[in-house]
Length: 463
Ligand code: MN
Ligand code: MN
Image (cartoon, rainbow, N blue to C red):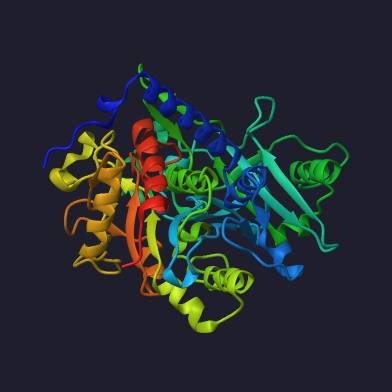
């Protein structure tokens, strides 16, 4: 089945749209390097488009009707956007889902120490990373420090050109004879991911003078004590902005394409929706996918179901069976990045079922590992509906598996949403170097993803 390259169908006007959308995406990517920052940006964008806070509606005992636009910020780490449809919610929603957490390195709870004139923060990595990729590159520190008095200090250091950055050292090649022959999983051990944060002693101190200086700077600038690390969430990410790649600037290298390259266009499709939809529309951007969708902000929690119940109550008045039917009868694109076919590593892919960069948005009937283990396996009936929607809207799309059978595998949030009995398919954008500090995507695929989400919101229907 031949698929053409998406770039071939664009005229000048369409090329300008591809570039304009990529510019907006890059701005979001640069502003949102953590799940919290992504939510903060999303709230700003949603309020600018007239979305109101569902929690405010709930507090005031307000009612909602067709055409109303609301968002819900869950713990500052998840966000859901809704546009109430003209049909009863029981006929199901058209849902776009994606995640906004990305692989990174987290700071430990008791992190600060000094060793031979260098001050370090000890870390614990988050998600699946090749640890050796995170050394000897400029790193930034983002997050929050929550203090006992109830206040929160927000931190973002290393992104502004005038900011300092942080650094994890690697072994010099001259002394690396043993290291070079160890397995890649052991080249840099988890406990070697120690972040250098200072090297200048505080004058007048007797011992741990560099650590003392770091603590003084933290106190002066942020009013933080060492104990405040105990209630902090500090994330170490690559420093710097996303960049165009290639003479033709058709690709983007950036941190956290997984899965902001799906979550941004999913959100944008709802924000840009004009008028009152037939079915209630939803975008849910979730946290903790990279570590198994666990915890109170992971898709495995009940926050989404609970929020749908709250929405249902505001629209129709509460009815447990109504909420059950709303979830069960919904249609969902669960979007997460696909493994882009990489000619440098052709051996792990089966080419005719691989995601090719530039061939548009990608649908995965199933993910999982081995014999589809742990996968959501989308219904053929639903895929047929999606095919028709995509072709009618002139969306460039392809289908793919995550590599050759039995080579590896992975999961997404799709199976969790499918637990309600809703029709759900994995969908997303091809990425090269997935989970590396700098991942890469195609601007054409990003744009086709956005077109895909817009078309799905308009076109998906109850069975
Ligand atoms: Mn992902
Ligand atoms: Mn991932």
